[in-house]
Structure formats: C-alpha cells, structure tokens
Image 1 (cartoon, rainbow, N blue to C red):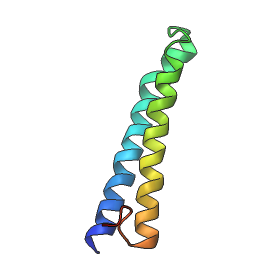
Image 2: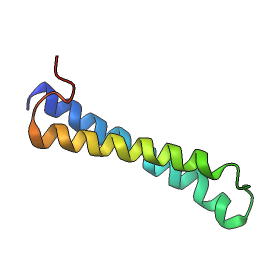
Image 3: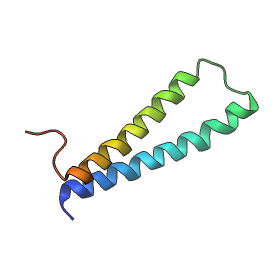
Length: 70
C-alpha cells in the first residue's frame, strides 16, 4: 500500500471517529432538549469537517495520488 493510500485510510478513520464522537456527544443532549439553538451550527461544523475528512480520504484511496499537487 502506498503512502498516499495509507494517508487516505488514516483520514477515513479519523473522520469516522469524528462522526462517532459527534453523534455520541450531541444526539442525547439534543433529544433531551438540553442544548439551545446556538450550539447547532457548531455541531454542523464538526460534522462537516468529519465528513470532509472521510470524502478526502476516499478520494485519495480511489485516485491514488496526492490531493494537493506540488
């Protein structure tokens, strides 16, 4: 496995952990009504970052090249 594909796999795992932590941390609080609407954009931001890591990692694995060329 090339270094780029290993890095892609690392990004996917990192993004998956971020998604899992986001769900584990915020979903119970949202269901209980403990969070106000000010917190929702922050939750969306963290979810977008985690999903972006997964998508970037998948792109690196599929194409096998560096996402930021020199």
